[in-house]
Length: 442
Picture 1 (cartoon, helix red, strand yellow):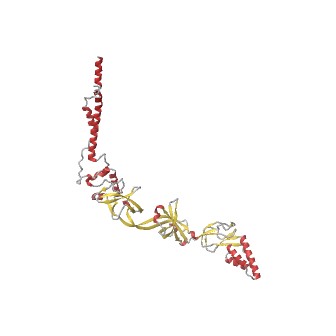
Picture 2: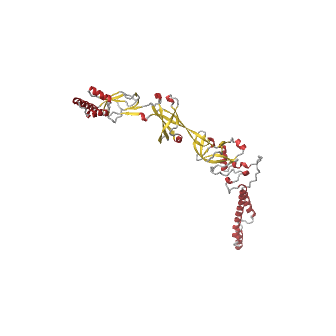
Picture 3: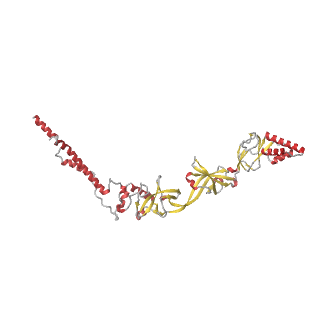
């Protein structure tokens, strides 16, 4: 009697738990037989009507699936197809352009002797000068002494009647110190040295910098004036970093400087700088331009438009490309369905995009209606309702729906199980022991 009481106490809860587990197991297997839940993912279920519409295609985004679309659905979605082909892309690049002096036509004026500026013929920046025009007059003690020595040597040799090498060397020295041949001939004729030496313009142009004034002490290292020949100027264009492949040596550009009053004109790139400007992330290219009338003034801003024709490449409409930011794909027509395919893009224009990898010539792609198609593909990949709409019968009638099993059925049956075993009360084991104790006390 003492062993029967514990067995009866443990056996009733165990039987109740086994009955509950059996009911839940049966419900799960019934659900598995009907819709494959929860043992398989929705993406692996076979599509209705034998269509492969839920399995990701090779090379496609894992968040998108094939979408079967019939002719009526294609018309309603306004889907338009295009055959993949090759064409030559003309890339247009716009850049900011600036006029600058031609560095090969800039001259710095220096004196060859030490001295002082006594007179300036050009006293303001911006003056136009001609080659050979006097610019400044300088007093130099060194040059004055050299002239005196040269004239003395001439007088001594003329008296003896013998031409000396001293005269030739003295004339050469005066030329090295900056005197012109005409000035040397003049002092030979007069027999008197010149107190001031004249500095002349080495070329015609505009004075862009004046570094001295009257009374300034100068030496050969002092820059007196800077003269720039503006009959030909440079145009420096800042090409954005992303557009660098479209601009190279010899590329033609249309230049427009509205403030100059000159109509737009064409020029060719004659130099591409080897480094980028880090602050603006642009590449500087140079174009040499003839400055007729001086209308292109250094510092003037304008625009440069480059157009380069590339090789024949595979292109698609820009609207056909779905760009997620991390990757790009297009929808390819395969039979009666459209599959997403990852692609590698190249040059991008306003209406066309180069495809470097992922497509072949002759394939059909979706050129319009991609947005709704991509939404349907995403919905199928996530197992949404859109992925099951193709199971509707052709007649338009809704397929019969089997009654869903009650999720609480297991709980009802488990509740009934203890009710059936009601005579075996959980406290039954305590009652006989109490009765026996009462009999012993009597």
